[in-house]
Length: 294
Ligand code: NDP
Image (cartoon, rainbow, N blue to C red; front, side):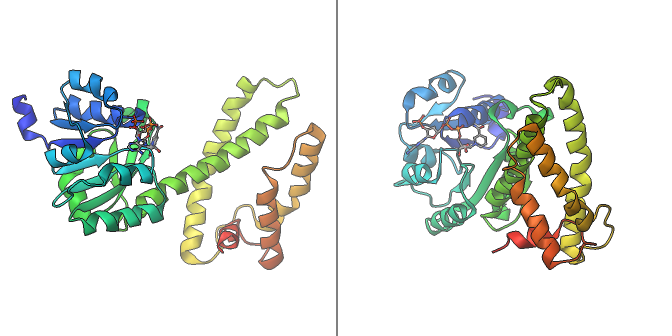
């Protein structure tokens, strides 16, 4: 152990898949003493050569250090790995992707076993881990005391953002951002399909699409947030619901003419039309949010 390592919080890490291994390397590189465990032991060989201590069981790895990071496949694997480990006095940070409900249940489960608990949602892929300029980060929620105490250590692999004491909120933020991303991917797929059979080069079209999505995203998102906050969907409206809904037939006719299925767009257009029927043509598109709530 180097002198530097004496100043660094020792870390236990359960799970050496693609993500766990990337996380592990950053703590080792930053000089944190690291104990690792993986169900398939051979996956720890490379890290052992780089200086990690390898525990034979998850319980042994948990016993080694107070701060225990978990990055396994899913909530079931977390339950399987921690079953039988003594969590008394441990600080458990679970970076495994789960639902908000699973995160809350796991928090109650860990707390009942004497641990402090923080849940995490990783907004990065393994190549972004340990590379701050890629902008990757991790949402954390749960014990504020745990987060404050270990903030520096947690920020070693990627930025650490605390989103509240509710342990389900990290997973919820994670899924909310990814859900919006899939909506954007759906729009991009439709746009590429529209030009697919024409003499338009997708490579030349791509920067136009990126530029447009980028220009539209920030004003739309902040306007929606402002209107949800105020409850007034008619202030500062630039392109109102009546006008935008009147444009729907042109979008559907163009799809038809280009031989493109409108199936990705129809659900959203349907919601716009329903809101127009129930609301006011002067509104923004914000009312669609309310229609989604059951
Ligand atoms: P991998 O599939 O590469 O690794 C899965 C890990 O879970 C392995 O360590 C595996 O062990 C372990 N595991 C699976 N089932 C069990 C079990 N029943 N008991 C004990 N251990 C088990 O996944 P990643 O490392 O990529 O992902 C880990 C977590 O990080 C996931 O929740 C994922 O959603 C999340 N994440 C991943 C991202 C990515 O791009 N990779 C991005 C953001 C989040 P073994 O080696 O023995 O199979």
